[in-house]
Length: 260
Ligand code: CO8
Image 1 (cartoon, rainbow, N blue to C red):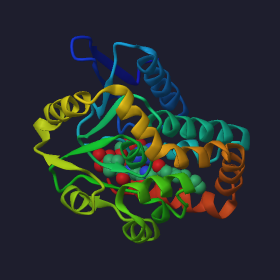
Image 2: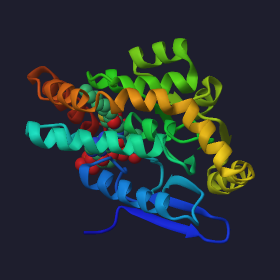
Image 3: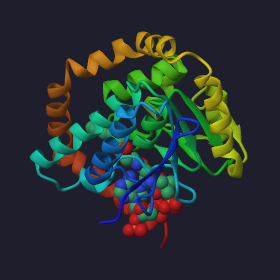
């Protein structure tokens, strides 16, 4: 099968570009997440790599979030395996010792937004057609506590409260306004801007930056680590409910129907 993640490490700068290339929309399937985590782990172990820019090689979409097909009509065992991989992705990115910058060159709903939120800095293409946010409630599902925590840590409690209840997707300019992203640049400059910004982070001595990062994020990470199994059980029992399966089916039909 074709690789879904393309890694390009520049050994002179110590910066890797991790390009997601799982056509058509970089949805986070179990296969994708497994490959993503292995790639990130390799970079984490590589002493010559100090920073990673996460981006999409596809037009228009950064990541469509969790692959809805992984949550629809699947066995509880499979759902559990999938959820563990979602947790792993977040733990790896949010807890990375490397500098992580999301170069958001397209739409980034739900799990795509989570991945971007887990980075240290977010640069988005200044295109009003691209949106980003945790829109879970719009699908009739609930963003788990660690999605919520990551959102609060980024935009603050009040903004997160409204955003999460309404399942808001923000246009790039609105995302900048609430601090969901840090910077907007023209589409063709997203990667260059990420490289430029990376240099600022890499000018700081690694150990001081890493300890500070860990100090800021450890509590949030520990909350999931100490509830990991319960979180999986909760997900599986929620997602396999008949009413939730019905919501997902309706959402899928809406997605497919938009083209007709
Ligand atoms: N999963 C599976 N398939 C998808 C997904 C997805 N997340 N997103 C899109 N697709 C499919 C489409 O159905 C379509 O399939 P087909 O070609 O067979 O019709 C194909 O990908 C291409 O999609 P579009 O034609 O819609 O492409 P566009 O470029 O027009 O739009 C978007 C791209 C903006 C990404 C759009 O597809 C979209 O909005 N997708 C839905 C995104 C979404 O709402 N994702 C939420 C997933 S849930 C999640 O991530 C967190 C869940 C938390 C767990 C809660 C536990 C209880």
